[in-house]
Image 1 (tube, rainbow, N blue to C red):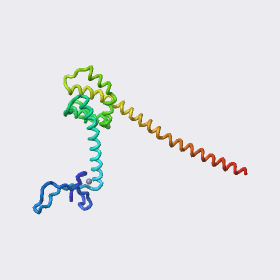
Image 2: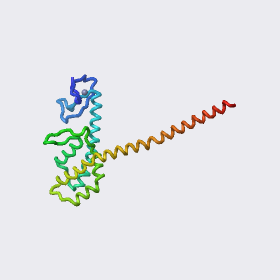
Image 3: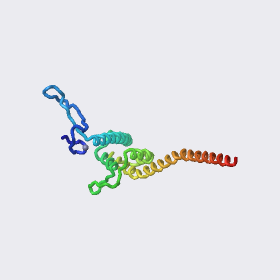
Image 4: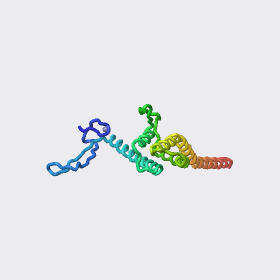
Length: 196
Ligand SMILES: [Zn+2]
């Protein structure tokens, strides 16, 4: 019985999903050798969702990455820089060289990017007035500024969501009023008919 590639438990081959890929090698009879991965069908759904999530995450990270590149006029972010970004994403911080989870949920990449954009003029001011020995120091200083403002941007987003929610609920309230008015009229009509 094959092992499920997602949950690592064994399952019945006949009812499992099979992901087949040619290995590029051939059997003695000339048929292509296949590389097969088995999944429980529910596990396969989870795996697909996970794949999709990772693609979306990768896209968002790319946007942030490119913004930071042009901001600091560099061609790549090094390992230390990426580690800082990942730590903020995962909600972990280094204390005495040990990684600990500080926040329940990390900061999404798009919120980091939004914060960079929100602080654009502040960051511009820093870059023009301060001198940094290395790009790492410059990145680090700016990233610290961004990290401190991330909560404000998240609060702003929540407030905006509420405003949008409020705006959307207006039409439905109007519909309710109209319905009430209509019902009242019908009642009035009935009332009059009672006198007739
Ligand atoms: Zn499974």
